[in-house]
Length: 305
Image 1 (cartoon, rainbow, N blue to C red):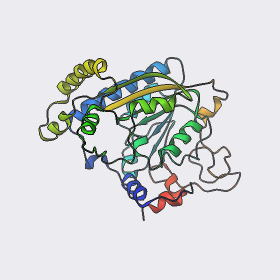
Image 2: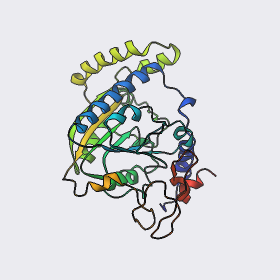
Image 3: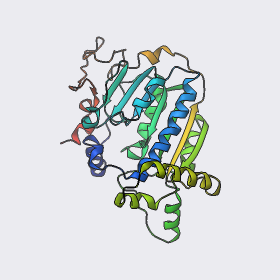
């Protein structure tokens, strides 16, 4: 990647490269909504796995708490995460490969080498979401599944603030995506399987920061409210969930088993091999055994300075 980052992008990227989820634990209602979100993801992957071997790319994989639940459904897994703190907590498993990096830079993966990509609260955290998305299009094979889920710019509270002339600050993000806009940009290359929004109990996020209510009852309350508003205001939930299948038929599924390549010459290169046999390019690996692609990119690396 050769793009020059702005000061805002650099500061934001710096926070991602040092992220620790323990610094800001979510309140109980947020946990309840996330659990419902994760259930939607799991059931979608389970359905896809009934007909396909699943070779997953998990952009923004964090510390692996959720991907571990998907593990029985997966044939192979590549997780990308900018924070070494989070990667250091990841439970290691056979045929599971970890990369320290960002979605904007994925030259170490072959074209059409994954048939499932999860973008769970990712595109709105990218410093260049279009570049990250184009990388996903390059890596995801025809017939592959993509799941995009994140905070929704069309949620009811934002619409209310707009009508009242009050600004809405999307804290901690560089972009803000809407339920309808995201479906529109997917429709050129994908067939949408499912689209919905969840999380209509907006005030409960703030309330449960102060009053630690149990997650179980909050999850039930969210389900009931989601059911009502799915009819009354289907696009207005706090989080949207969209699953879609890329148009076309996969041509070379052998790429799934060996998805890595040399970032410089694009020759096949197995994970863990430090020097490309074709061009001599050297790949750095972190102590816990992850590929450190941050060290390959001057602009991303400069954000740490």
